[in-house]
Image 1 (tube, rainbow, N blue to C red):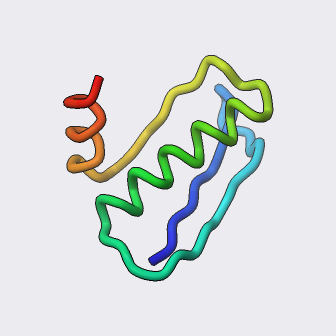
Image 2 (cartoon, rainbow, N blue to C red):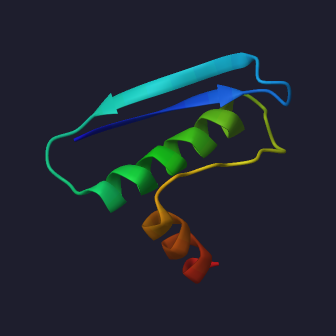
Amino acid sequence: MGFGGVIRDSVGRWLGGFAISEIGGDPLRAELLAIKEGLSFCWNFGYKHVVCEADFIGAISTIKCAI
């Protein structure tokens, strides 16, 4: 299982990205880990006002229920 993400600014310019490979897991876990890693990336580089986009409704629903 692998996952990754792209970090862009408000006009779409590339700021960074990441790709991680793991053994095992399922699509929900991969999407949640991608969101976590993306938000950690933003935080570590000082980006505090972010919009997070995901295309897996299961992950979005899981996060909404946890908030």
